[in-house]
Length: 286
Length: 334
Image 1 (cartoon, rainbow over the protein chains, first blue to last red):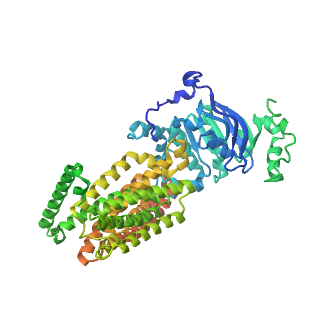
Image 2: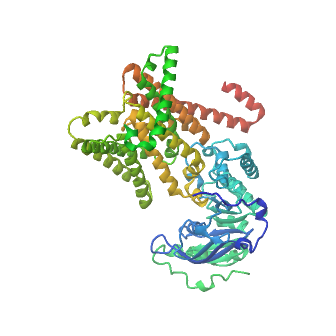
Image 3: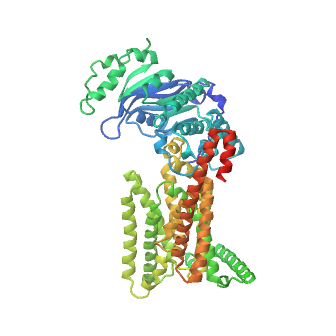
């Protein structure tokens, strides 16, 4: 309920590795043998992967493959049926230092409400967990201006958020995470409804942030963009079909297997095409 | 009537409130004398203006969050359950011969209904208009049945709850409203940031560690308080309009959220003061007159909003075409 009593972590903490301290390791996201389903049938099954500090990980997979659910599990928004999820060294569900994670939701062009609110007000929300029930201070506002400068939006600060294009809106949400001094940026299909030109600029922004030490976990339907920008690819369709570098992914047949299963029989025939499942990590380390 | 029944514990604060309301009354009477405003000769008008002015602050304060969460209907549902609360109060009074203010029972019943609506929405995972309609009808039906069970005089007095009445705002009722006003404005001030976050982006608010369902419950409970407070002069049937219409009007012209909040309070004050004045002059029902003025303000704001967005488009094209053209565009716009 309250954010009080949570120590503020400076930007420099992003670059500093502090293994052991507060029981923390370099592992920002740690998912082990995770199984979860909204109903009886699991949406993700036996999934394990980790994201280390400073990595840029892209999760791809066909529609309904459990990508977004996996993100929500990693963030602690669902209770896993089996396995465990850890966020910055703590169990995701009980994770309290929420301001260290920045989240950009799916399809902001559709989901942004038609309500009067300015870009600056949206970005200021990133400071809310720090302020708790206290007042927003001048230093909070300075952080907001800084974040808007980083994403190149300072001139649009007083615009209504609904008056922005999809790409500009995404930048505003990134700025919100930056203003909150997030160490991990989690994005769920951020380019849906964004025009092609803005998509390129958007991925460039993510790469720049990653170069400066931001850990990025991204779910994306645009496979080409992930292969081009991410440092690691996870291919998911209920289970992990591939986890490795983009070059190794391009050389493997994981894409066909993951997407083929889904096309072969959306329901009921989910075993088809998984005969070579044991070789699913074959592309790794090539 | 409220204070003696609840007991001596609230005696002193009540006396203080009554004294303050008396001061307000004297001040308005003096203003009325000085400016020759006949309306201000009456104590009940002083109370009505006080209550109306406070409602015009707290209704948009809560309504802004409701409207932008697409929960505008909840005000209506709670108003009808508050009506059931009034009926419960009247029923208990006639049965046991007690003197509980029906507004106190209305607050209690409406807040219980608010929590019930929240529970329903948490279990069914949505604010659906069906469950809201069920709560609304149940409240009204319960009120109607309880009142019909009472014989004689009670049914006569029920009109004042259905349609509101300026003349019956007593000092006790005004004091209750001051308390509700203080609670609502203090709570909204403290939780403004959290309510805004939950309103704008529920998922991100959850990721940020906010207990969303707790804030939803808080929101509906505050709504119940506003509804009961405003019921005295607006009446059950029109009370929800104060939560919605000024907010919708402000949303037409405001850019920012804080701006929208302030604008909706200003517009609501205009509607209340103009509405009360007109209803006094022409002896029309206050609730209806206030709502009609508010709707007129809304229509005006829609037109102003259209003009404003046209100007924004011009500005934007100026920004694109650059300095020289911008100067020409600016003069053309004038």
